[in-house]
Image (cartoon, rainbow, N blue to C red; front, side, top):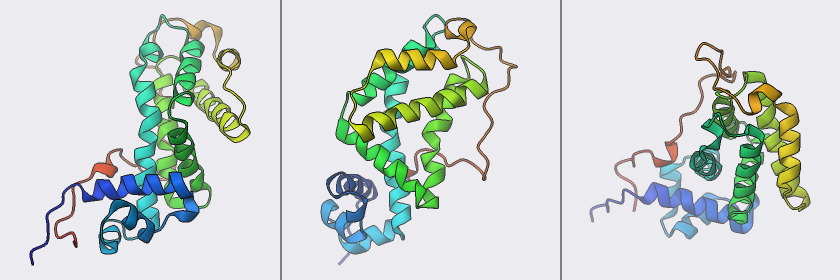
Length: 218
């Protein structure tokens, strides 16, 4: 019997892995549980993702897209006439007030990098991308400090259940940004940007949508 061509199977497996983590936590993630959630043979999950780490990397990369989409949809970060602290605080508010399950899932996968080194380059992607974007409005050191502060605010809200306070976020973010750069001109093009993170070449987004291997077991 010929094998059925199923080009979307890899993506369905990734989406199923995200659902499993959302429902059962990382402890419930396995090739078997994902195969059941995706309604595919067990052999398909191990074919596309040999190890659980490979599957988690793909799931984390896709989960990271949630925050990236919120940032991309808000033009305030790139507008030199917009107060940078206000724009960042508003972006955080939009993200945290959206699909809370998706936000918590994104951070659960993100924090899994503490114990799984394979996840660390992907976990760093959102921070690197945001720092690069902020460096268009301020210097690289301040950009990195802002990313660390954004990360800390999000963790406090998610881990303590404290409601997000946009006014507080705007205040503390504003204290980090030099006054002249909160509202002003974009940086000159010859001003140095953020350095690439150490430890080798950055992972490239889009692996979650890589071409399907031929001969996927059915």
